[in-house]
Length: 313
Image (cartoon, rainbow, N blue to C red; front, side, top):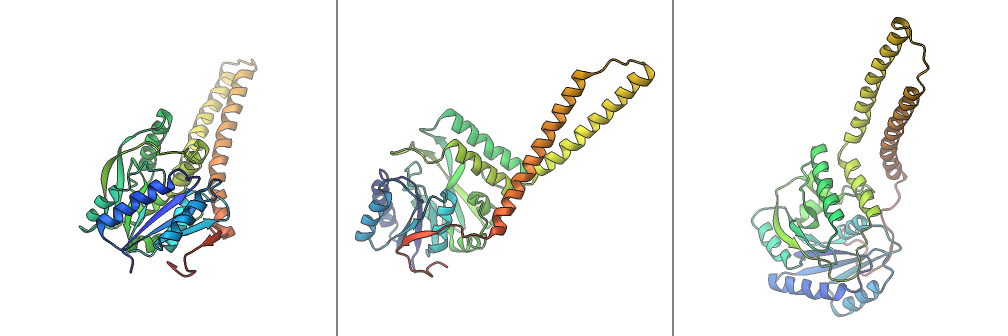
């Protein structure tokens, strides 16, 4: 039985794959445990998969999954979780912003009785002020609107017990937000703190568009607050409209003022129209996700792999 599985999603990481592999080898040698590395190529357009195949040729403990196209970071991690067989499973990105050597401390902390140990960032090097600001406030807002205790200043870098992974495999939703799902599962969870380095090489695949989609997935998966907000806003606007109606009747019947209120009408129409469009958009986001789930399409399609078909299933 393999003790430690390390899952690494890859998207255009040709410049990072070899340094990452060497550092991960150092980690498992230090721990002295049986291991497997599971590399998932998420539709890379560079030489990533060729370099992974070269590593596989010299190390039988390295497994790979090659997607037919880009399915996204969270789906790539999910594919690794589906096929990893270790008693403990690590998720780590390939850009070396998260130091592989921290796995040693995380693994040892898990041995003291925890089922999940996640890495909590003290500092984030090499990232723009806008990205730091949006990330900081997204997690704090999400924490405030959901009943699930999702830790702030964390990513997917963590180690989990096999029982947690087995539960995750029973949660096949298409719009994945894994760190939220892991928090929802429960069990004993703790963290280790670290300073996040800047990216070793290459460019991040997480554009602001992808970050926005990821944020929407997190909010819609773990909170119905936007729907409640749309309802509350509707009541507030209705209340305001009622008082405006009383005022209009007052000036018409009591004060007998007959001047047409063009400005107030336009403002009211635009305001109400904006509220309605926002509310429809919020509802549409949830309906879109329901639509994705009922189609029941596979989460990912594998072009090639060296993992046996039933391994991890």
